[in-house]
Image 1: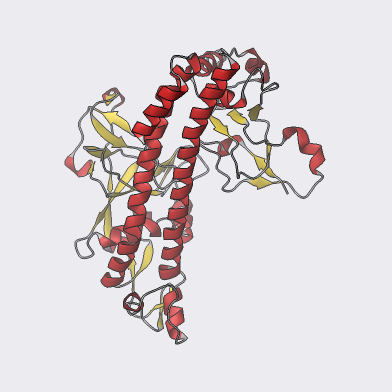
Image 2: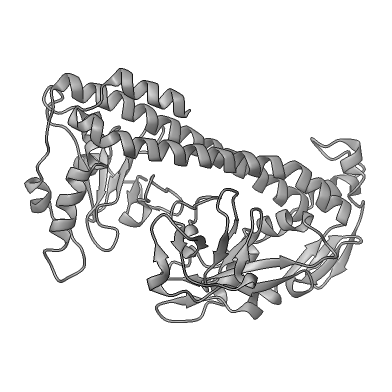
Length: 418
């Protein structure tokens, strides 16, 4: 049946359909007034996420809005262009009114339907609205395309890891006397042609079953002080705000810090980090891995994060292997199962250290890294481009809405940035 979209699936930049609930097959006509329409502005209206904005874009599945969501649609496109409404929803005029309304109650933030009807919107001419909508929708489309490309590249890398190191497809093919599919002879030769029994069951012959403590160490980060946080200066601090379930990179919330931290807490581009804390009971963040991007030096981790320090025996090639290992179902189940705490969940270091992985040969680790490293680099570059376009959009937004900037000027700025 139809998707029932809850507020928790509306993220800062998009709608996440992973794990959504569905209605049983029913007569859709009963829900017609609550169904999504292409171009809708989706607004969260309750809790700490109140005022989070997303748009219904081309290719999205149809869904039913939950009571903690509102949708905005123009009643007359000759008066209010829907594209301009989307742009305005990300602008300062709405944000300032939202903050005032959310502060008007001592209870959890809430944006009622009555409050929404009291919002005021400044409307330029319909011609200017359409100009602004054209340029801002164009930026949104580029950002969406970059992130959809990243999702595809990540899915390719995930599928490769699962085929090689979880399902052991190349080994199974060789057992049957077949050539592994989509693989050159040199790479195929790195896989054994038989299995042997281990504590984890049947594994490729010659591969080791090792606990993570024999492969790496988990260094907990720095307990920072709130008065050391700063805007635009200081070291980059990687905290749990950087981790985001559906994304490979999510560093738009990296904080800056002017306080002290120790050398053991410092991280460098390419370092593997993992979240050891989750502020929600959904456990989406707990145990999630990330690779530290370039362009954020100096950087360090907070106490909510572990740095994964790889042993000298295995070199950097094992970093990519561990990055994908930490995203597999068996590891996710362990991280969730070992979570402690009632409100704030913590992942104990020893729960990670005792987790066992099936480790292939060093040459096969290198072959895997040779394939996935370019994919991860492209993902990082695309995310940098998306971040740049997001910043450009936020810079142009108030000037376009107010009429200070016209379409030709904005188009020139975008081309220069791209």
